[in-house]
Image 1 (spheres, rainbow, N blue to C red):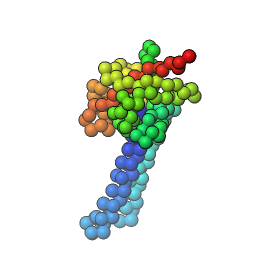
Image 2 (cartoon, rainbow, N blue to C red):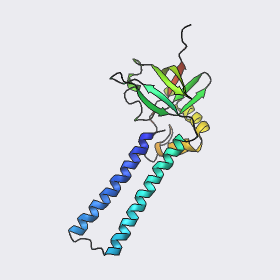
Image 3 (cartoon, rainbow, N blue to C red):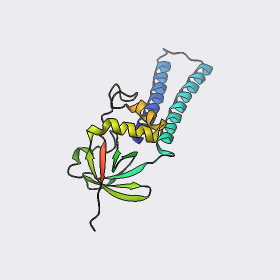
Image 4 (cartoon, helix red, strand yellow):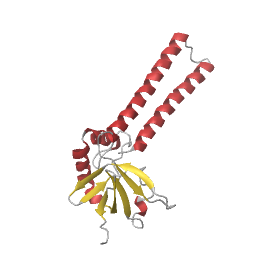
Length: 190
C-alpha cells in the first residue's frame, strides 16, 4: 500500500499533460505544426481526457487502499526524534502481526530499526506498543496474508508495485524489495 504511489502517479499525469502542452506550443510557434482551431480543440480535449483518466485512476487507487479495509497508523521515529505517522495495512498470523511498508514509508526508520525497535500503532482507535523486527523470511507469507485480507485491493497494488516473485507495472522491472516488519506485542510491566 503506497499513498506515495498515488502522489507519484498524479505528478506523472500532470507533468505529461504539461509537457504535451509545451511541446505543442513549441511546434506551433516554430511553424512546424499547423493546427486549425477545431484541431487544436481536439488536441485539448484528448489531453483533458488523458488527465481525467489519470485523476480517476489516482482516486480509484486511493479508494481501493483506504475505503472499507483496516488501515493502521504506525508512529515511526525519525532522526529528529519527531514521530512520523504512516498509514499502512496490517496482517495477523498467530501471535504476530506484520506491516509491509513501501519504499517511501519508513525510509529512515527501517535502516535504523535496531536502535528504534519500539513503535506505537493506532489500530481501531487503540494505541498498542510493538517491538518491530525486519522479517525477510516472511515475505511470501506476508504477501499471501495481504492477498487474503485485502483481496482485490492487494492484487491491484501488487500489479502496480510487484510481489516477491514478479515485477510490477510501476517498478520498472523490479520485484518488491520491501522487507516485511514483524510486530511483537510489548507487554507492559505489572
